[in-house]
Length: 407
Ligand code: DI6
Ligand code: FE
Image (cartoon, rainbow, N blue to C red; front, side):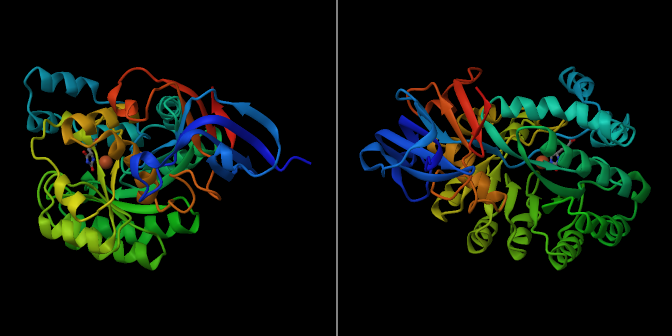
C-alpha cells in the first residue's frame, strides 16, 4: 500500500519559509511527498524516509516553489476603461473624464447592467491568465455594484469562479469602494445600507471571507469606515483596507486599530501608521500596477516596513481603472523596478506574505508538512529569475492540492 499519492524527487526547492535565508532553499537534490492534497514530507533526498508513492517522478533538477497567490484583485467587473485610458493619453484630465461620466462610475454602470453569466464570462479569462502564470489562490473583491443586488451578484460570481476554475478564490466585500450616486450627499446613509442590509446577507450566505473599504477623501472617511469595520467585526469577518493611496488619511492606523489582515497601497502612510501596522502585525500589500498607471511618484515607506519587520506582499490590484494588469509576474517585475523590492521579497510577497494577507498562512504560502500541496515547477536557473524576466512564463507545471492544474 503506497504511503503517498505523489513523490517528486531530484528537485531544487525554495520553501519560502520565514526565517530561513536564501528563499528557504533545500539542497541540490530535494524531494516532496504529497498525501491527500497536503505535503506529507519535504527535504533533502538523502534524508527521505522509506516509503513509496502511487506516482513517482524525477524533476531532473528543476526548481519548485510555492504556487503564487494574488491577494488583491477587483477582477469581476463589467465593461472596461480602455477608451478613457486613450483619452487621458490624448490629454484629457481625470476631471474631464469624471464629468463626462467616466471613471469608476462607468464601471459601476456596466457592472450593474451585466448579468451574473456575463460577469462570469468576462472574469474567467482574467482568472485563467493568472492560473497560467502559476497562481493557485486569488482574492476577488466586490465594489462595482454599490447596491445590494449587484454587490451580492459580484460575490456570487466570485464564488462561482472558485467552483469552476482551478483557482481557490477568496472573496472580499468592498461595497465601501466609493459613494454611489443614489447617496451622493449622504455617505453615512450608504454606510448604514452596507451595515444593515448588505453585510448581514453576505454573512448569512457566507459570500465574503473579509471586508474591505477605500479610505480616501474621494471615498470614505476613517470615521465612516470605523462604523463599517465595527459591524464586520461583530459579524466575525476580518478586515483589510485600501489605505493612504492618494493621501495620508490615517488609513494604516485605522487598519491597525482593527487588527486588519492587511493595509493596501500605502504610498502616503506616515511613520505612525507604520508603527501601528507593526504592532497589529498587519501585512503591507504593495500594488505597483496602480502606482505606475496613476503616474504616482510618492513611494510607500518600504524601508520603514523593512526596519519594523512588517510583512510585505505584492499583488496585481487587477481593476479596469488604475491597474488593468492580469499578470502577477508583471506585478513582481514592477515591484522590483519601481519599489526596489529584492527578487526574494517579490517571491515572498506573492507566496508567504500574500497568504498571510488573506489569513491563510497556516494553510499555504510556504512548502511545509501539513500545508496544501500548492506548488509550481519552473524552467529557471534560480528563483530570482521570477522577478527578473517578464513575458516568458518559464512555468513547467502547477499543482493545486496535489493535482496538476497546468502542465
Ligand atoms: N483604488 C484604486 O486604485 C481603484 N480602487 C481603489 O480602491 C480604482 C478603481 C477604478 O478606478 O475602477
Ligand atoms: Fe484595489
